Amino acid sequence: MQEVLNLDLIGAGLIIIGAGFGLGKIGSAAMEGIARQPEAAGKIQTAMIIIAALLEGVAFAALFAV
Amino acid sequence: MITFAPKFGGLKFYQKMLKENVFRNLLTIAIVGMSFTAFAAPADPQTGDATKAVDTKDEVTAFIDHHLADSHYYSFYADAEAGEHYGLPLPIILWDNGLKVFSSARFHHGEELVEMDGNYYRLYHSKIYKTDAEGTITYGEKGYPSNERPLDFSLTKNVVTMILVSILMLILFSSLAKSYKKGPLPTGFGRVLEPLVLYVRDEIAKPNIGKNYRKYMGFLLTVFFFIWILNLLGMTPLGVNVTGNIAVTFALALVTFFITQFSANKDYWKHIFWMPGLPIPMKIILAPIEVLGMFTKPFALMIRLFANMTAGHVMVMSLLGLIFVYQNWIAGPAFFGFTLFISIIELLVAFLQAYIFTLLSALYIGMATEEHSDHHPADNEDIPVI
Image 1 (tube, helix red, strand yellow):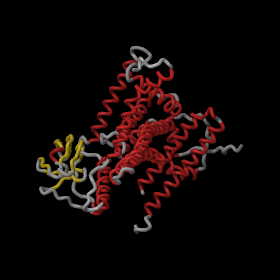
Image 2 (cartoon, rainbow over the protein chains, first blue to last red; image 1 turned 135 degrees about the vertical axis):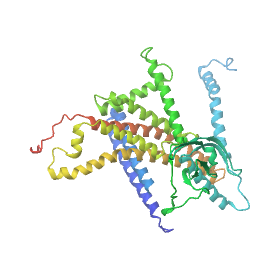
Image 3 (cartoon, each protein chain N blue to C red; image 1 turned 45 degrees about the vertical axis):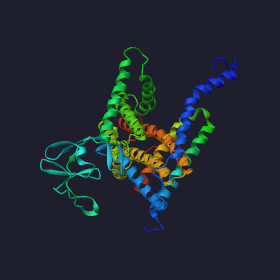
């Protein structure tokens, strides 16, 4: 592409924005769940990590394609 | 000196702690202090700093590419100026109307042709091509070489690492199994492995697969520990990047795919091709989507592991290379700190990716083998509206 407007990098930036937004939503939902029920903190944390890993997989795969 | 210390609990404890931690503190200071001297080569005053930085960036890129790729020669150290490579030449096994076995030292890192039984082979960008006597590589469209390629079954770096890890796992787990003959508690290294095995059984296999989980425990345990150990080995300076090779993750995902398909029961196939409880036009539309989903799930497994590992390695090595690109007293320790931080996160990612792969495999197997106790409305009944 041209020197000034590199669409590849803008695409990568959009992917990272999407991943960051998704991870933020996961984190906030996990925080709220733990705040409501502190005794379920272990299970909520496990589920949060799993979903974060899935989202990271999608983000990295898309970054690779770019 | 410690024995003559006054017997106040606090002071003696402090002196004891100082004596025990002094070695650890010295080691930490030595390692961090070494980061201040991380220069690859002194800056060349004649050509100026700008061109030297560009050359170093290309060198760093070439180094990263070499680390990520598989290779037929296990190199320990390469001196680029003298042109010397020190390492272990691995055997090359080709099938080209006959088995041809020779050592990769005969290739001399892509400089020489190897002549065997009248065929000439040349190593070009880590791939072996069949050429004529001068070693010409003809390029097809898009700039890729279009020479013929023999079937390459060589023992490359990745293959040797996988074989060694399999032997290691065999030794460790058979020693764990044998230690159960003596009593209910394992001995030796089995004491580290037993909680992990129980974790895989109680958190991954049993909740997802249900009552006949024992059939699949072998596969789940193997895949979990295989991927975990290979991910960790990729983090070491040994220079092996096995799970960052898409062929390896493709093979692992393929095994998961075959296990799910061959152990699936009739309900699973019925749900894919002829989803019960829906009107007929919906069923016909849904069938190709479900078939695509059948293939997308192992494909995502493959891509997830490959992309996470490769991206992690590239990040760590790029940060490390930045120390050599910006050669000054502030950037060296700063980038060293970043590299250390990212490496620690990568250790977590190594475990996490193995856990995710195993969890999702167990989930897919569970979905394929579960017996439905719920009642789908038959096709001539109405969907109940409550």
